[in-house]
Length: 138
Image (cartoon, rainbow, N blue to C red; front, side, top):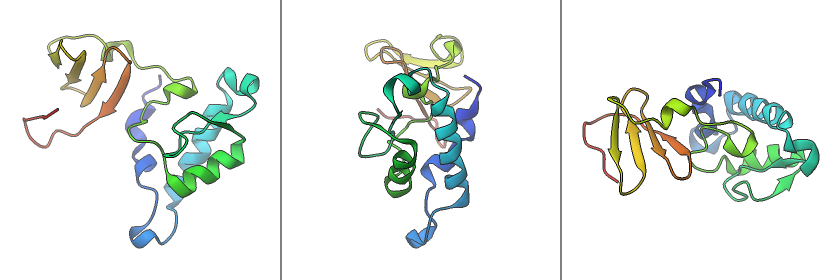
């Protein structure tokens, strides 16, 4: 992965206050997402893109323009910072437990204190959090 997940705040900042239209950063980001998804090895085989909108949750394969409309209307599914269903992989260092981690072996979850990521080692899914306090509740 190329570290872009840290610059993807636009994914969850879709509309202006009062839902007065889509933000330009969101529209540009959706276009970048579609371009990235077109490069995924399964794009040609599947005949489209797995739609990561809130409703489809990567379960439906749709044409590019339909995916854009879904994302414009509904936004991305929660916590989809790393586009694992579109060819991105989690960095291996996120899966390694070291001095920068707080772990719970019973749940296969650890938190990287240095990057602010919560990682589920079983599913290889990650979530970015912000440390506003020293207490994290699960």
